Length: 494
Image 1 (cartoon, one colour):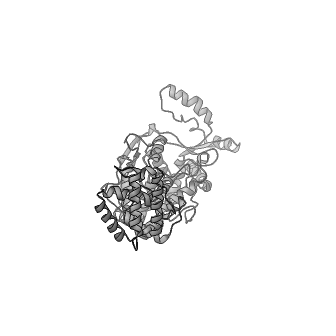
Image 2 (image 1 turned 60 degrees about the vertical axis):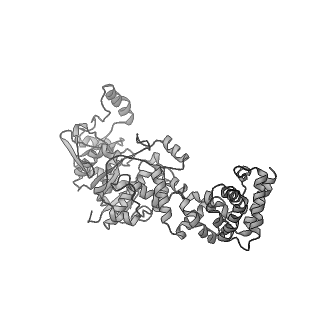
Image 3 (image 1 turned 60 degrees about the horizontal axis):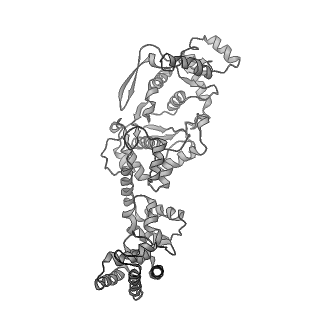
């Protein structure tokens, strides 16, 4: 367990919807920071201007807050290490690029992109070589480079990778990673527009913001040796590097594609945080589920945030790929719904009823919580299990009103007898109503499923509902009697 306060960061690009991978990385960052009394930072890596999506940055901030991962520093809360958007840090990157040039670890490159692509890379591919920069500008003298820059010639800045020897980089999960330097490329650090690439910006920002642990996706393992060399070229201490396990699609074969994501959405699941919120998942369920995909604790552990903070350890993280299992998400979500107080659950359900155009009475809502809580997998399930409580009228399917083994006329007679019995009661208290209706079942010789089935559809408008007589008590005597009368009229017209 870490004892020194950790400074961690989540640094997403605002190029699309916030997804599960970002959420899990942010969670691990948050847990480590809180466990050690450190800070959790949000930094927006928005230098890929062409791919930036309007509203994506706000979606990231909203998503983190919905999950309960409140950051200590960030674009909208400030902090002494800002700015926290990379497009607002251009001069910082230019300054550090110049430091590397002056130290002989970087150089201006005047090669044009189309020249690199059309001529050199195609020629390399014909020779069955991996496309790479051939070092054309690597040996231009500093004086010549300075003259060309002074003349306004467009250029990038490239990192000068060592050609000999081996780069040994240490990942906390994977141990030493050795790469022959001759396999590494002179990557662009600063683009012609003055904006940095990830390779420069992330390294500079992590140092400037005093990040102690860099948790990021395993897709960065390919450029890990480059990043380590950049840190060492500056002469800085390295953070603890942790490349997290990759998520696989539910089949366990390959990453989730747009096609699989679309199919999951049809089944009421998503890998995007905004969708999960709309679909009725709880932040507690999403966090519990995602935490265990890559953290070596029991798969069935039900953990709240306090427990996760207490138990988290980067030594328990695993490098093994994790297949996304949406059934596990359903399990954890349903479990956390059951752990909520009635007041908390009622407050979370209310927006889903309102979304359906239903006017919710708070007193009634609290009454139905004990009836529907155990039936909810997602919060929006409240509509199918409780929407009828807040409707003036229900419109049952006429076929559903006919009991098994009976016809419409017989079912109508049962509905009339039920109406007669219930109308004669002083109250529709569930115990009183159930006792009277069970007595009717006994004397009729019919099954309870037949009589209660007709009554359930008449009163709730559906074949499946919470306990019938408890539901009727909440709906109220007059409204129940009116709904039964409506069912009789439907049956008599058949």
